[in-house]
Figure 1 (cartoon, rainbow, N blue to C red):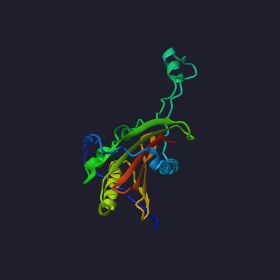
Figure 2 (figure 1 turned 30 degrees about the horizontal axis):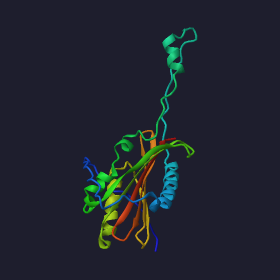
Figure 3 (figure 1 turned 135 degrees about the vertical axis):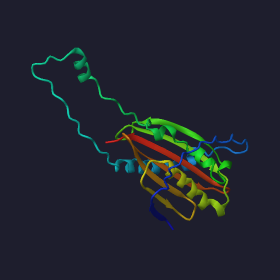
Figure 4 (figure 1 turned 90 degrees about the vertical axis):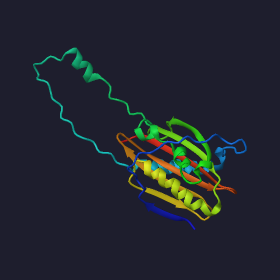
Length: 214
């Protein structure tokens, strides 16, 4: 049975701590991209659509007009023709400091997870240029503790993400997708967590997408 929930993420006020992820054990290989490829495509679409729904405000600014008799100086002309600052997706404070694997490592049973970043890029295939960064990890969690473990991981993502809401969906086969849209300064984006249950644990992918706000 598929369940859909809309809930507020747990937002904490205390400082976060970063812990290094342990080395990859030789007997465990990282999950390959095809395992969650289909989920990732759907997740990326959901994340982008959620980002479009975030509305930003703009502040009016009073501009002093020079007297008609005043002659503009060379410096004033240079300032008037200077190009506006470019907002590059992926440069928000949150995107630059987001380390989900370190968050997982401090959760109970999380220290045994084996994962890594699978890359980041500026993607121009969206209507607006979008920064995309992704991580994948495998966590050997027993079947009786998986649901609680997934809730703890998603709760930690919600705690550090500058968001006001979140959305999750899951089924009885152990599949889970959670979406956390956010907005910070001139940026809007989302964090998506996708989980697939395997024979001896959980394969988790986390994707951050960010673009310049409206």
